[in-house]
Structure formats: C-alpha cells, structure tokens
Length: 395
Ligand code: PSV
Ligand code: MN
Image (cartoon, rainbow, N blue to C red; front, side):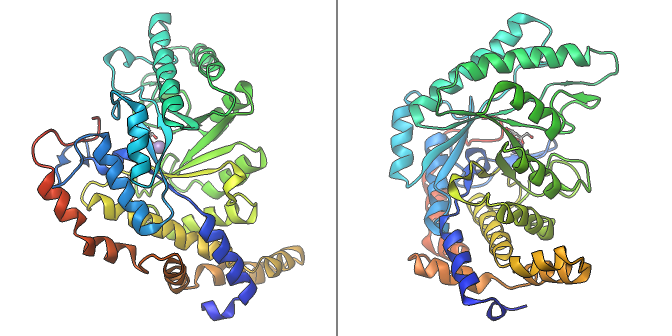
C-alpha cells in the first residue's frame, strides 16, 4: 500500500496526532556504555548532567518531539536543581521522570526495598524521599522505580515475606508523593537475580500499583520479557485496567539488550503502537508516557536517540493509517484474511514521505540525522569536552 491509498481525512488525522506526540529521552543514553566485558569511550561524551541535558536538547532540536529528559539519581545529582531545570529550559527541554537507583550499593546485595533488615529498607525508602524532593525542584511528575531485588537460590529467602516488605516500603514512598505526582513501577523477568525477581512481571507490578492507589502505574520496558512474549497483549491489558503509566522503549535480540527501538523487530513496535492508537492512548492526556531506555554501545549517542525516535514515529504513523472502519467490519464479520490484510496494508505503507512533510511543515529538516550531522555539534563537543571524567553507565 502507498500513502495515496489512504484517504485525505485519515492522513490529516494521522498528521495531527503525530504533531502532538512526545517522546522522553534518558540522560544515561548520552554517557559511555558497553557490556559487562567493556565500556567503550566515545569522543565528546558529556561529563556531567548539564552536558547530558545539552545533548538531549539536540535530539529535540532536530526531531521536534523529544521535549523531556529522564534523570537517574544519583548519576545525575547536582548542587542546585532549580539551576538544572533552568538549564534544561534554556536547551528547549524539561526534566521528565526521576529514576531511583537501587542496584549499585553494597548494602543492597540481598535486597533494598525488600531487604530483611529494617535499617536497609529504610535507607532505600529514604533514597526515594530524596528523589521526590528532586522532583519538586525540577517540576518532574513521575518517580520511576525499577526494583533490581531478587534471589539466586531456592530457599534463600521467603518469597512471601519479600512481597510483604516490598508492599510496606512502596506504601511509605507513595504516601510521600504530592497529589500531582505519580509512582511508576517497572518490572523485569530476570537480571540481576536468577531464581526470583521481586517484581518479575506486569501482573506483580499491577497488583502493587492497585494496592497503592490511583497514581501508581506500571512501566513496560520492551526488553524485560521472555523471548516471544506477546507485548501488545500486555499493553492492551494495562490500558484496560487504566494502569499503563509509561513505556521504556528499546529493542532486544536475546536479553535486555537496550538497543535502538525498532531495530530488532519493527513489526512488534507497530503492533504495540496499534494497541496504543486504537485504544486512544496516544493522546497527550492519556497518562501514558513514551520514554526511551537505551544504552548505545557502539553507535554515536545523539544519532542513536534520533534514530529511535524516528523509528517510533514511523511505527506510530503506520498505526494511525490503519483503516479502522474496514478492520472493525472485517473483525465483526469473521473475515480473518480481510482483517489481517487491512492490518498489514498499514504496516507495509512507506510513511517516510509523510513524516518528512510533517517536519518541513514544522520548520524542521526532513531528515533529522542528516541535519544533526551537518550542524557540526558532534565535532564541536568532541573538541570542547576535553578533561574531566566522561559520564558512563553508573556515573
Ligand atoms: C533496568 O534494566 C532498567 O531498564 C531500568 O529502567 C533502569 O533504571 C535502567 O534500566 C537503567 O539503565
Ligand atoms: Mn527500563
């Protein structure tokens, strides 16, 4: 199918929805990254949160749809958060979700929010109270928690007692939030622990969120499922429950690979965006925050973020071009092949001209990567950012 097969009305509606779409980028994507074997250093990588935010500003400058940057605490700790928020504004962006960190402290080896020792649980809770203060200073809405806790051996700890401790810790954190702030809770089925993870799946996250209250929502990281999991089914379930708070978008082949969104399986990304679009969750006030969570190991950082954003835009545009009436009619009449054909027609449409036109209409270059490369920013920061310590995964 080509674009000309879509009605002008559908194209106009798709364009309007694409104009309103926003995607949040993670500060940690701009630092050096790698695997547990090697972290590769790249020229021009930021040395502090200010430089990370400046790089995030570049992503927004060329795509026009990345107006927020998520921070990770303590990696992005600064003296003056009002000043950091001002710096973000000067760079055309705002502070997005504040991510807590429970995975880099020796005392958390056997757990943080679930630890058997009350003193260590209190320390982990206190870290979140600090994150909430940072949210107040930066104007951030979402406290994002990924819980790395778990066990490696059967019998190592009580599965039930850990859930009870977790529920109590989360309730204390939730109670400290302001009325306009949310707690968004991520799940992951394995890693760093191998036998149990304390929040391994969307069901566990959802149960905790429901016990906490309305402003607790689930975060779906696309890399955090077993191979072949039907992620769009989970998206539909969470939307139905009104508890899909955010995505951490990335792509994976084998494990939690954290690669560019849509690079491994663009069709899966389209299927996810179809659930979003067809259930009205693309609207800016839907409560679903679209975030990236990636670490670029071998590709240039800023371009990697731009590519991911373009991939999400393409999947979204295709989902917006689905002939919803024809699809519903085929579904209701039991026309299996017709329904699937309508779905695939949209997926197989080349939407790149539509997105290029949209960018031009917004005063942007039709190709954000070409424009970024031509700007000379990468060469400039490589020359300027000499000395100091480059930010890396974990700093
Ligand atoms: C954990 O794998 C995770 O997806 C969480 O979102 C963390 O905060 C992030 O990665 C850190 O890279
Ligand atoms: Mn994540």
